[in-house]
Image (cartoon, rainbow, N blue to C red; front, side, top):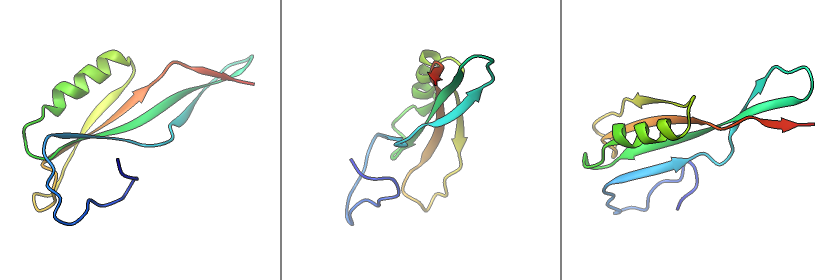
Length: 98
């Protein structure tokens, strides 16, 4: 586990899929007359380091499990370590705030 923006140690070799979850969700307000409600939107990054992981399949399973979520591919320069990335925005059920 490493912090956001923290690099891998020199000489580290990575294979497979990495899942990066941002620590805090974004709140999306829902207009309401009685109590304040908001949807938590969690941002995840799916990272394929060696072209062996199916990011499309993983993203599809996440979107199916959390309706209202979406996924987009991110272009990665070939000279940079990861081979393919996707950003997945998961939407949770509304929460009520006083």
